[in-house]
Length: 311
Image (cartoon, rainbow, N blue to C red; front, side, top):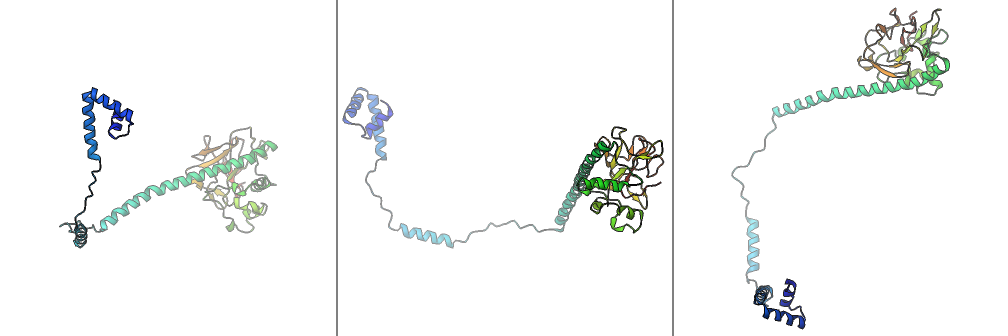
C-alpha cells in the first residue's frame, strides 16, 4: 500500500469499497497494520480537541504596565564613549598638499592634450589648404608663388575667397606670433598689401601660415614649384617674426616651439621637429639666409603672407 492511500484511509477520504480493501490488507499484513496505527496516533495529535483556552484575567493589565515601565526606563550609556576628533591644522596641510600634487599632475596633462588638439586642428587646416592648392596646381602646372603684379598674400586670399572657404584656414589656430592687423601703420608695406586683399580674408592673415614664395629660374624670373617636381614643403606654421621684415631662429611659436606642421607638394601633412629640410635648407630662409625667392627648385623659402620680400 502506498503512503497516499494509507493517509487517505486515516483521514476518511476513501469510499466503503476502498476502505474494506485496506482493512483486508491490514489483516493480512501485521507490519502494515502497525504502520497504520502509528500514523493514526500522530494524526490525532493534530486534530482539534475542542478545548477553548481562556487567557488569564490580568493579562491586559500586565501588558499595559510592562509597556509603561519600558517607556520610563532611561537608556544606560556606556561608561566610555569615543570623542569626536577635532580638525587640526596638520590635517589642512595634508589636504592642501594632496590638492597641489593633483593639480601639478593634471595641469600639464591638460595643457598637453590642448596642444595636441591644436596640432590636429592645424593639420586639418593644412589639408584643406592642400585641396585648394592641389586644384590650382593641376590647372596651372605649378603652385602659387609671389609675383610682382600679385603678391602672395593677395594671391592666396583670392584663391580661398573664390572657393568660398573660411579665410580662417589661412592661419594656425594656436599661432602665437605674427602681425597684429590693428597695429599696422598706415602707408606701410603691410598696409598697402592689405588694401589689395579682400576684407573678408583679413581674419585669416592676422596669424597666417607661411607659404613658399617660389624660386628664380635660370633666367632670373620668379616661378612656382611644380607638383611633380622635388618634394618640398609648400605651407607650414609661421616662424617668429622680427619687425619689420625678418624671422627669428628656432621653431615656430605656434606649438610651443616643439616643431611645426608642414604641407608638402605631395599634399601630405608632416610634423617637422626641426625647421631644417634636407641637410641644410632652412624652410623659412633661402640658401643665402634671406626671406626671399629660392635659387632653384630644391631651395625652399616659406614666408608669412603679410611679410615683405627681402630683395
